[in-house]
Image (cartoon, rainbow, N blue to C red; front, side, top):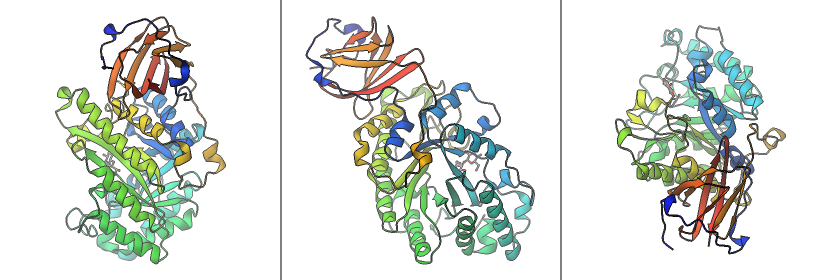
Length: 451
Ligand code: 9MR
C-alpha cells in the first residue's frame, strides 16, 4: 500500500479488520519512565537561566516530566561553589538538589577538578604545589561532603587531556602545571573518602572519535587501566559527545569505547550530548535535516541501551532557545525541543529506540535501590488513550486530536487531525510506527502495527 502524507486525501470510512494489529503501551509514556523501566537514567542540564529564575515555565514542566537525572550547567563548578578561598556558596546547588528530590531525580555533580572556570584566587597559587594540593583537597572534601548522599555521581576530573597529542593537558591547567599527574589520582581518592557511595567519573570531549592510534579515547583507556591497577576509585567515564550532524561514525565509536571499558568494570555515560547544525543554517533546515538529526540521536540511544555498562544519557540542554551551541560553539539547533518548546523528531527517535529495546533485554549497571524504584511520574496531565481497529485509530478522552506518525527510525511519515475522536489510516503502508497524539495539554505516544 502506498504512503500518502496528506491528511486531506485520507478516506474517512472505517475498515474493520480486527483489533489484533494493535500494540498496547502505557499511556503518556515519557523518556524518564521508559529509562526507569530499563534501570537507566536520562537527563538534561538545568541551564543557568533556570537557577536565576529567568526561563520560560515550559522549561521546568518539560524537564521534570521527561528526565530522571539532572546536572547544573555551571552552578556546581569550582568558581561557583568556592568563589573566594574557604568561602563556599551552595545556594544554587542546593536549589537543584531540592528540585531533584521533589521530582525523583538522580543528581550528577559537575565538576570538581577542571582547568576552566577556576577562580583567580586559585590561579594565584600557581607554582606552589603543596598549597594547591591542599586547596584541591579542601575543595573536594567540602563540596562532596556537603552533598554527600545527595549527589549520586561526580565528574571528579574534567577535560584533563590536551587537544594536540592527546596526552595530559600540560598548558593552561593550573592543576597539572603545578601538581602534575598526581592531581588526578588524588582528586579521585579524596572524592571517594568524602562520599564512598558516589560514582566517580573522568569526563572529557572528543572521546567519540574512536580508539585509533594516538586517540584521546585510547589515552583515557590507558589511564583507566592504570587507575584500576593502582586502586584509584574511578567507577565511570563520561563521554561529553558534543557533535555535529556530519559525525555519523560517532555512535559506533562510543559503542567500541563502552566495550573496552567493560573490561575494567567501568561504566560509560553520555554526559553532554548535543548534535548541532552549522551556525547560520537554521533558516534553511527542513524535515529531512531534522530526521537525520533524529536518526543520529536514535543511534546513540540504541548503543546506550545495548551496552550493559552504560548508565546515563544526558543532553547538554533541553531547548534550542537556551543552548551554549549558538553563543560559544558555532553550531545551532542541537537539542530535542525547538525554540518554541515543540518536540523535534529527535525526541520521537529516542522514544522509538526505547520501544525497540524491551526492558527485559536491557541490563542496568546499577543496583536498583529504593530511591530508584520509587521514581514515579510527577506531572499529571489529562489522560487520553487510543486504539486501532483495522485502519481506524480511535481516541478516547478527546474529541479532536493532532496525530503524527513516525517510522521506526523516527522519520515523520504522516501528520493530520482526528475529528470526532477517530482517524482513518488506510493510506499508510503496512509496518510498525510510533504514533504521537496531542489533545490540549495531553500527549500520548504509542507504537502501532499497521497491517
Ligand atoms: O554550557 C556551559 C556554558 O554556559 C559555560 O559558559 C561554559 C564555560 O566553560 O561551560 C559550558 O559547559 C561546558 C561543560 O561544563 C564542560 N564541557 C563543555 C560544556 C560546553 O562548553
